[in-house]
Image: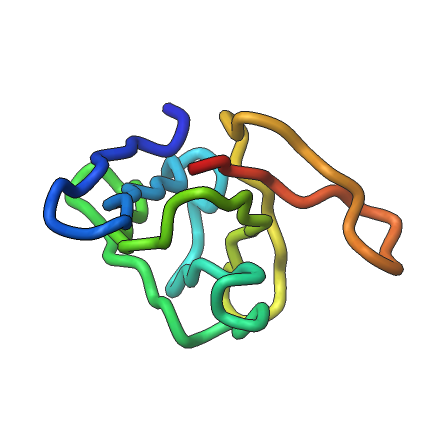
Length: 102
């Protein structure tokens, strides 16, 4: 499932729901969302494990921008969103980042 978006009417923000499916990290203890919106911090946005085994996080982000992001699994393994809107090359790294446009 791609990032679910709910645009707020009270301010120029979008409530984004990020989900990492259980299959992407079956043995993970922790998963966090990292991206250019939090200086790629691997622990500032921890995700909640659901009963299904998926990890989920809702986050308000300003509209009118694109955001690069990835999931950080157990503080060391990085995973893209399997259903991202697009992928872009990561600056200075031989990998791509997931992209969401608001």
